[in-house]
Amino acid sequence: MHELGITRSVIAICAENSGGAAVKRVTLEIGKLSAILPDAVRFCFDICAKGTVVEGADLEILEIPGRGRCRLCGRTIILSQLVGRCECGSNDLEIIAGEELKVKEMEV
Amino acid sequence: MCVTCGCSDKDQIAITNPKTGDQKFISHNEAHALGHSHTHGEEHADTPVRHEHLHAHHEHHSQAVSDSGSAAVMARSHNRTIELEKEILGKNQLIAERNREWLTAKGILALNLVSSPGSGKTTLLEQTVLALKDEFEISVTEGDQETIHDAERIRATGGKALQINTGTGCHLEAEMLERGIKSLDPASNSLLFIENVGNLVCPALFDLGERAKVAILSVTEGEDKPLKYPHMFRACELMILNKIDLLPFVRFDVEKCVDYARQVNPEISVIRLSATTGEGCVDWYRWLEEVGSSSPAAKTQRRN
Image (cartoon, rainbow over all chains, first blue to last red; front, side, top):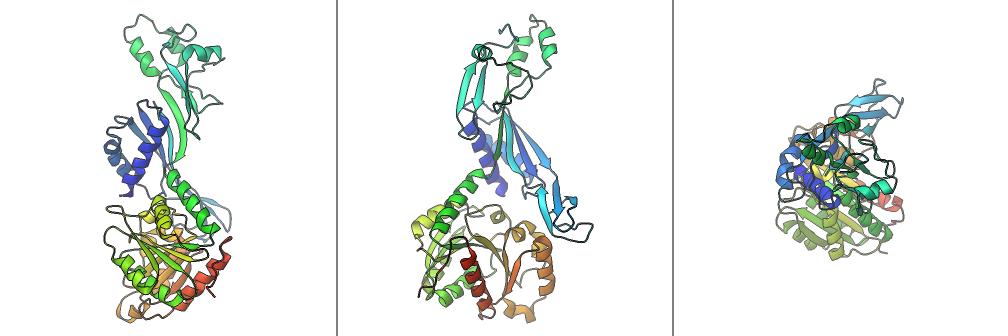
């Protein structure tokens, strides 16, 4: 359940930047290859937000699909998990998207 | 009400600098006086703040002011969107970089050892301290949820050790290591082993400031662990296959395991050893020396 710690960091970032104003919506970017489960973050969000300026805010999670670039032939492929194989047969892939773990914006 | 755009005068515009967290509030009139063009719903190029309306601009102006709901709509419509673009793990990363700078400046080779519980991390460290303590000063930070058993085991071999108990926490974070190294105060040009909490999931996400992560997998576990926990094996520079003395008694396909690890991380190095019998440990010591001498500014020097 590292999502608990992750969610606490999200709340801390929002609280630090809201200038004391109540936060109405928080938008996160979570990559599909990031090892963070959006559902677990949703589960923790209300609990962590309690008693902070984020209490009652809507949580919006944008899931970013995984993409890799083959280091051998340069093709870009969609990755549903960290392990993948390019059409050319190589598994030497550079992950170019899907590892995001960001507080994108918030509405106050 | 603002005659320019119909917005409530009470509303303020906040200018937030996401770098410093500094916030400046300006009133609506001031904003117009400053030439604030107030393009509703559009992003201001020079600030990370968007002055957002829930409805289109023209629709907003054509609304009857006498509409009893309009005041509430307007108040609600003045939500501000603050663009943050902040890494959730940014604070940990910052402290990790500070740790890395400090360790590198002192020429300390710091390695973050990760594995499942019971893979033999502490036994390997005991062996390593016994074998190398005449050549290098060795410090160990032991991460466990509870007990100081592991730190006591390391101390008994002659290494400097500090126990970090995470309580219910399932991994070490950079701040814990920062406190750890302050308290341990490892010597210049020494070796620092950071034994993480036995867990193949979360420690992959948290940089502590180490030179490299090393995964330890014992042959009493499944050979498909690298595929089951790809994040961890992808984050590591080296995989140690421990307890190879038990290979005749267990069903473990070494080649398959190495193949799985390379599917996840084509660049991972692999060392097979037994921390109990000492077989293969010399490869580990050689690896330590190579990595120590190739670290930027971190020339881990022999004692003599």
